[in-house]
Length: 152
Image (cartoon, rainbow, N blue to C red):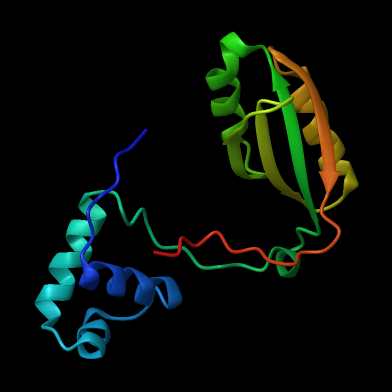
């Protein structure tokens, strides 16, 4: 498990600004907080080097690109092979999230599909994986909130 990084007020302000608009320039951030552009550059570089900032990606509406089905899939795995199975599941393009969880199931997977046939094929691939005991699939009917950004 990674260790928390100590952040000061300016680091937090920078992270919040980037969460709102990752395309904001160093100059714009510097002006917003009344510091030098070089300070912002150095802070963002340090946050990136320390793994706080993992990268930048656009927020894409899945339905607008044809991914109309979101499924939450719970997976039961032979315990000795949990990490191995999780790493294999994480390689599938359809998968957005893989969580190692507690309870009756070992893994929670969030994945997106164009249609039921793609989902069906995916579930069959999961069940065919060595060490996967069983799955339970839940369809997402309505998205009330979906925001994976981290609030600091």
